[in-house]
Length: 234
Image (cartoon, rainbow, N blue to C red; front, side):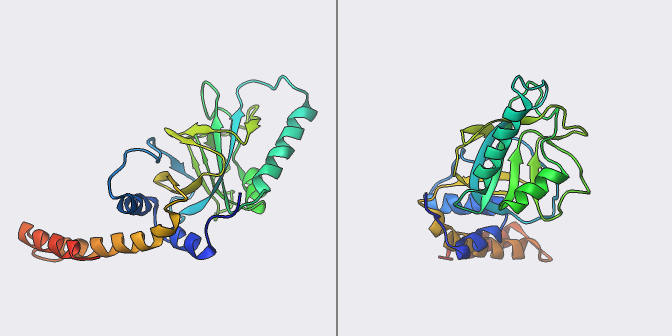
């Protein structure tokens, strides 16, 4: 698989939040859509961090019961998983589905795994599992998790490079993801290059409405006039 986007397009996407990207996708499509994005709440390790964008590296974890395999087999799979995370194309976003009956019982994400994944080129992670070590994890690496846990319990990689489902969204290996504290959206590579222009148009169309709404003496009539001005922007 070849890298789909230029660094300039990545930079444009990373410069806006995920709701703006969702709006821009709808603008390119020419209609609204009710799929392709997460539909359940996430907990952000660093709520003030900007969005992160990358190609999905997927995996499945479990932590409630000890592994039935030998420690050597468990370790070998984990090393293979790390090699997979580091593979091209990049940048990458890690997506791990916790398949325990109680997802998040054992935290895979903490200070050590954040350091490893960041070093291997990952921009952030999306997981329905848990995280820990808040305050100690790298402040530039975003974790969007389902819960918090103080312990790692028996957590381990069960499989990787497979379709997963987190927060109501099915994600496949190498899907292009845009994510921030709101959640994540999948970007169709067929429209990815059109998004910077669409993002600019969305921003410019919102500007007159926001300016009017935030000005003294705002009325419905001024709203109607601002809407008309926004519709004239192309």
